[in-house]
Amino acid sequence: MKLTVAVRELLMDESGQDLVEYALVMAVVGLGLIATIQELTSGVRSLYSSIIVTIAGTGMIPPEIQY
Image (cartoon, rainbow, N blue to C red; front, side, top):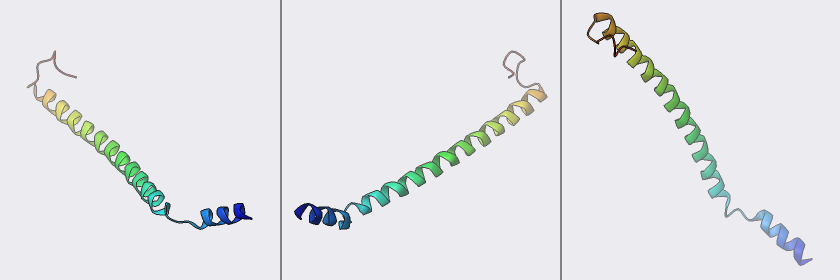
């Protein structure tokens, strides 16, 4: 009888629920940040590549440095 009461009280206890919710929110925010950073990284690489190609086309970069 005591075991069923203890299990029932354990199932009804919500004291750790906030911590789990915060952890889930932080996980979602972290995944969003990772996706955003990856997208920004590819955009910055593309920007620098176009700058290098433009500068290389003007002849301002010596041939041995061109990418």
